[in-house]
Each structure stands twice: as structure tokens, then as C-alpha cells.
Length: 176
Image (cartoon, one colour):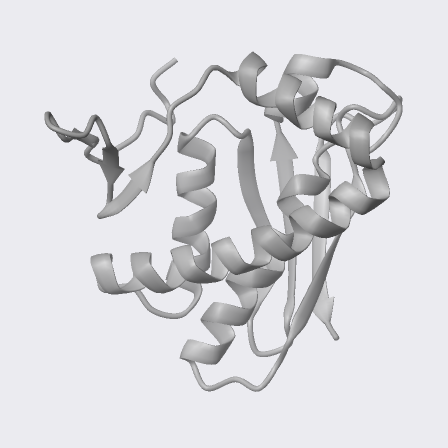
């Protein structure tokens, strides 16, 4: 059970109640609470509109996170992206495994096992982890820019564990 146990400190400010990890403020909520809210917004807006909004927000957030974490931990290059996948895996979203990563080419392939969305929703015969998609492009673009690589990327979900016949999720990032 402790294989992916976080090696990151969680600090709670006694005055404000704000949780902080790696110098960034955090929120801690039950999975069902988050997924139920996610599904409610998806139903209100439609999956396509919601996915587009989440892509942009996720891209921006991943870019910012990678920039801050690189500075906080003295990381550079591929290590920043791999650290991001490790931290996502430690925070309950699922287990993210980088199958391939070529920052200069703007490509990566990430496998997702035990997705929090799949674990909550089950087999619903559609891609349910689209919230993560912008995260990969944002992380790739931040790492590339920090290395002076002039590539911009886009990401898409290839498959979801929530789809019949799929045992894991898969995401790919390619140059624009």
C-alpha cells in the first residue's frame, strides 16, 4: 500500500488552515466529492466544452507547477517532467508512467493506471480522464522552453481505462 507513499512534506498553517506542499498551496478533498463536482459541470456544459476549458486551465497550471517545482528542487530537463508524473501519481489521480519522452521532438507517451475517474465511475465506455490532457502539453512546453527548445505541443487522450476493452489510459503529446 505504501509503494507510492509521498516523500513530500505537507505543512498546515495553524492560523489559516492552508495546506502547503513544496511551497505551493494545496486542497485536500475526498475523491467522490471532486468527481461528483466534475460530472455535474460536465453535464451542465457538455463534455466537449468542459474538456476544452479544462485543457487550457490544465496547461497553464502544469506549466506553472513545473516552473515552480524545478526551482524548488533544483531540477532541469526530463527530470522536471518525470518529477511531475511522480507527484501526480502520489496525489491520488492515478499512476502515471512515462513510456517515452523526447522534449526536443515535443513527444511523449504516458500510461495511466488506476485512474481516479475510472475508480469512481467504472466502465462507462468513454474517455473520462480528459482533464489531464492539457497537463502533459503544459509540462512539455515548460520543460522545452527552459531548455531553449523551440517546440510547442498538443496532447490528446488515446484511450481510457473506462472504455470497454482498455486496461489502462494512454496519452500522447506531439508538436503543433
